[in-house]
Amino acid sequence: MSAALVRPYLVDLQTRIVRALEAFDGKSFRSDSWQRPDGGGGLTRVIEGGNFFERGGVNFSHVMGGQLPPSATANRPELAGAAFEAMGVSLVLHPRNPYCPTVHMNVRFFSTRPADGSDAAPVWWFGGGMDLTPYYGFVEDAQHFHRVCRDAVAPFGSELYPRFKAWCDRYFFLKHRNEPRGIGGLFFDDFNEQDFAHSFALTQSVGDAFLSAYLPIIERRRDTPWGERERAFQSYRHGRYVEFNLVFDRGTHFGLQSGGRTESILMSMPAEVSWRYDWQPEAGSAEARLYEEFLSARDWV
Image (cartoon, rainbow, N blue to C red):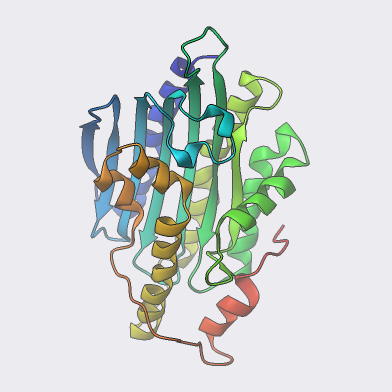
């Protein structure tokens, strides 16, 4: 088991994804290399005001520290105080066209050393997944995204897709709103089943599946006409994205609690956001259909 095996894959994954997105958008990402005073650093790749993407980022980070923050020990209290090494690729893409969904993907690796300095074996785990947040729902898009997610983990066990899908539905849920953030996908954390090679291969499969899951959807929807009504609804739903990331997201909390680079952590925020008091969609509208048919846990495959 070695973090040295994971890092080259993550660096290459970031490069491959950015190249594909640049080819799709026609505008280059900005590259921003950074160092963390407490150890480690990363490379943030950001696009703003693109031809298609209003805002988006594809981050690579590799950080280490003397004590795991609370967000990383929520499910592993026995690791409180342990030294850690963490690396991952995390992306969020916000298209300008409201008929094109926002997407999030993350793959990551953690390793810890005993807080007491003993020779005990390090504890390691992988995590990650991807999820889709539409503003105007299309059944064929939801089916495609979930089928790619299913196929990515199928070689590692038929039980993993329903397990990781259910986990995603639970995780990306705004409890204070009593509604999902989007239509879900896959989510897994604290994953170290069988052995390192098996867990790493599964994580690679999820990362490698991202472009196949997302690009066909935005290819299909990119030229759909939209107006002020659709844009206003997209901005309103962006508010839900902000609420989730700041209130619930463990990755955001880990980054901020561990002294990470704020600009890179908050690159996931949409550029345009609005909130309306007690707003309700008009009955029978396309906006109401999102709530009634898409923002509920269901079997898309």
